Image (spheres, rainbow, N blue to C red):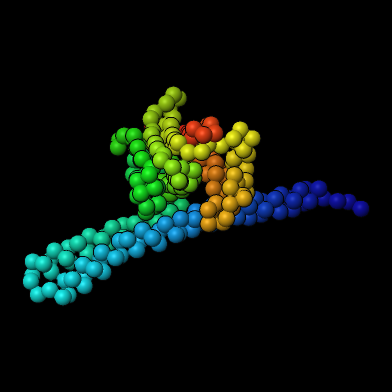
Length: 259
């Protein structure tokens, strides 16, 4: 009995190619689901802050309906329009994070992506006694996917906020050129820090340092940092973490500089 090895090898290769294609599709789906899950983590904050914006909008509109003086009506409507515009802008940025990323890496400025990641929190960090410091030159550019980088930064900012809740803290985001044509972005907090045994596992899938807290307090299922590392790798980037218990945590991202 003769067996055609070439046909067998071709068949095996065909099935391997199919499995690789399915794996890539599943990975993309998981990344998008993680974006949605991350936004779900702050759903209570989103609802509270949206209510804070909707209340004056409705109040000003009702005031305008009750008044007959043109100038007072104009002032009330301008304020209502301002609140509505801010709501629309926030919704656009949040929906942008949930969208599919089909464009891929491109040369773009970093500062707007940092701002969008912060804005997607909706909540003013000062209300949580957290001081925000951003040191990113408006002209600094790199090669990256804006949607992917926004997701990574949003995950890091969200984690930093959670680590500092209940006490005064400082969140610092900076970016600068470094050696060998790379751009470095640092997200630093003064939160509770991460112990050394957890640092070794921090990027593993489904690992969480908050497994004993309630779902609302710990948020996701431990995929945020794992997917953040995947996203950085896909952009020819890196992510690393340094932390000391009781002092805080610093995440460092690197990306190719714009050529």
